[in-house]
Image (cartoon, rainbow, N blue to C red):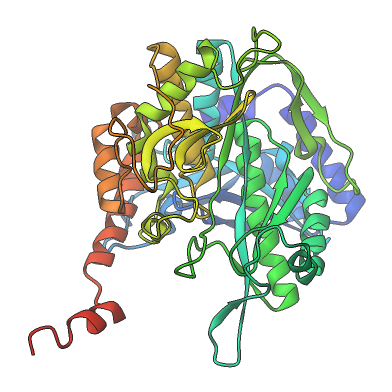
Length: 485
């Protein structure tokens, strides 16, 4: 869909008018037009709310390199797009408009990205390095091809940290898993996050204290992949704001403390047919209805046709092919799930819940894929720094391959794979360089990053890997200073 078709979509004019009514009703003065770069960073521009109609029809322009954080590689060259490139156009999606609960003068809206109309090639076309737009297109194609859709729930583990008297990072609470007293230590922070979350359309459901310092997991209801990804990004923004208010640090860095658990972002996956959007009543009415909509009802195809009392540790046909696709492509998916050099600290510190092998099992948390209940499958390799749009796109591509080509996942594992990995299971890549090599070799997962996306993403990640390899660290001095003396 090009920019003109996007602007002409049925219902867009009414949605734009609904936003104007909300702006006037709430006296909103300023709007952040935001999207997400390939690394998961929220970028965009701001505009006075008085300009909303102009913004909704013309969007805002930014350099193409905004999708790569307008960053340069270690040799000083711009990543993804050079300075000679044109400017992208970011068109807001009115159904994502919401007032910020911490400052009612300001609202945010997510944007879809397009090539400039003045481009010589593909003028006005959808920008293929737009990870949000890419996910929307891939999920629509998946739904059309298989007459089913994906629903995703993510578990956003992260840590609340502070600086001690020596300026060292420490947890706001102690590393006691499920400990209610540690929830009490973080009570005011948690309640502020929940309040802001509900105001921004997150239907919060449950939470717990995990087993690292200051580590919380506060969950919200599962949904369509695009809305779920938007909500995970919103959750991170909420946590950053709450950290400013309490004078602490909202840490999404995967493993700040060696010898303790890291922060994952497990993706819970289910395939459905039918259902419809329902608008969930929230504490405040400061968003357009689309922000508060969740897909509900329909038939969960992972349980469809199961006989009551049947063996719960047995997948039906759709579940088997779905898991088969994900397991087949686990090595390449790791380049999206564990997307930073730092991500692999989580895997090398063995025994702290992170998967190491490309296998699956029922309720087996040492596996990369866990069938956690008859109605859903948990993908466990993703960590807290994951870009949820790229991750969902990669998983869709893997599941599509499994469904289309009847891929068998092989036997499930009931063993503790930390102690002895089954011989038939491959190891996951154990560093970013190896993961990128697996991605290069996997045409199916590569197809989830179409057009410019693959080039922009891998350029950014290869530069990160090279910077790491070229850096002299404290470890080098500790290990080699007296190596030959």
